[in-house]
Image (cartoon, rainbow, N blue to C red; front, side, top):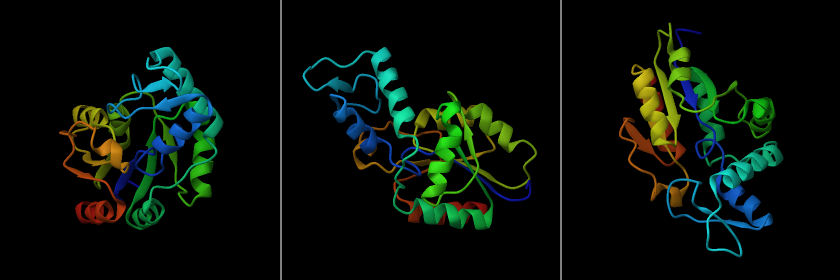
Length: 201
């Protein structure tokens, strides 16, 4: 409804764990994930090599991961409770860059762990899609994502949308560039939830 706040939430490392399950997936297939920078490209290595995988191989491994693991997910601590609370205040939509053909599988997997809400599959920068969601909305719209570049995209295409950076994984927080286009940054749901209610209530 247009007169209710709208919360656009990313999935990976915002609602559900990605890095640790992906690292476990890689290990089973003979690869390792190296935390050298805030990127997958250049940080995936064969277990028996010091040369990182090329971009084509990284893309193949990510695709295999989503295809084989999309039906299973583990909630970030506090995420289930946070989504249920936000649903009392407004509308919640998961805006994620999962491949389109896997969107329904991921929505069902999230529902099974208690995050039962609409999901929209996106590709690339999320600013244009955030603008579509915000058009004609009378109540506040808030965007949460772990990637600074996505906040920059939303700031460019939908400047009226409030932007809150969220990244749960402790090792990645030391590597992520500053999310300058976001107004606040959080790494846990209790604090983030309190802020979201404050700015939309």
